[in-house]
Image (cartoon, rainbow, N blue to C red; front, top):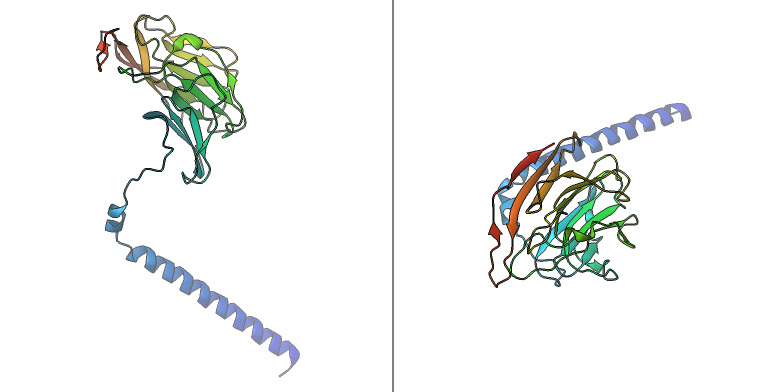
Length: 247
């Protein structure tokens, strides 16, 4: 057999082997996918992965597209970060003068940009207050205080999905009495300046915020007229004015 014929035959042989191998891989993958019953997922259980400090929590955030990086803010234990899906947690907020965190948001368009609102929004008999909003532009390594100091209790922060400098803060306000700083605040320059865009009075604060990822011009805000009496009781006292607002 001549050299040219041999090379041609070998090329055909390798091509045939490749096609057969590819077919077997695709077939076996499909077979395995079809052979796994959905009932197996029913055995998956929730488990505690820490961090074991700070008690209850209202603030958890992840990074879009990254299944291993998460942030955890406790009501009196600061902010913690994991980059291995919770195997190891590292405290990243301990140098700040406040430990109560009520809200965390990671900018979808820039995962290094993080906003944190201090002060828990669950105004029960045992609570800790905050001193406004903080921001990190390096994934939590350093933080800058952005003001809104007298909001005391911040319930939620949402960020425009396309612009990390456009951010909204929902402030529940003082836990024990009227407070003019209750409401929704907006910044278009990364927190340098704030404008109150929803004001429902000194006794009604914001309990939650939501932004439409497909159309960030659409927002919803939940409001709550509530305060805690000075005497010892678990539940706060509610009043009129609570409801749902849309912009």
